[in-house]
Image (tube, rainbow, N blue to C red; front, top):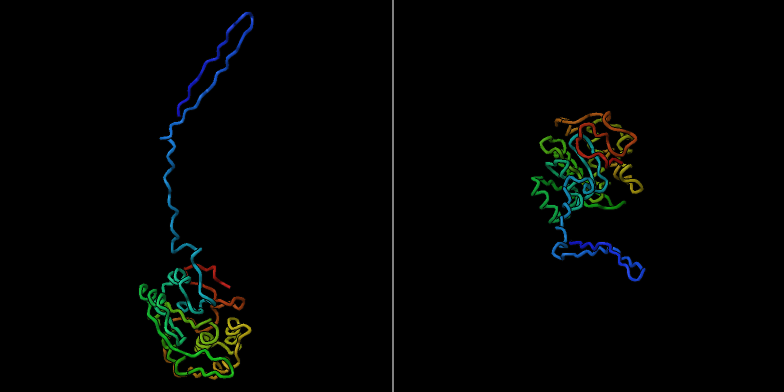
Length: 236
């Protein structure tokens, strides 16, 4: 930009004085008006808390054991923070391709124990399938592990409830935890199954986690995360 200055002058003509005021003229050079370089906005980071969306009904069961509903692509960034080694799926349907790729990329092993999601009164929970799934849960080499079904309520609730029997929880505490996730859809048949489930054949298996309820809070639908170093804002 160039500025020209005109000085103030005065002239006298027959006794009359005329004053000429200074005028500043700004001359713009259009070559100087090029737009500033565009700075691209930073792309979202996987670790950004805004991207950390837990699956439906997510909670920590015990050290290295988690539960939830069926995870989808919106939950991948969150699941990465758990450092999962394996996932136990209690649904019979084939795994979605995108989720299968996520497991493959992360080196996560999938254990699928297909249990049909029947509604009462047509409920048939296969005890042998629950027993085999429990063996996977009890093996510390599979930890951290995520247990899930479709909603994280009934099938997942039954498996976790049978695990609680191994941990020597009383039935009232087992049913209370189950009902926190199942809410209005709690099933008497599920609770009956947990009550009658025989854990004697699994008692010989080593457990690398607590055998009592001392690590869990009665006021929360999720346990107290004493050793978990990941994000804790998903607590209920």
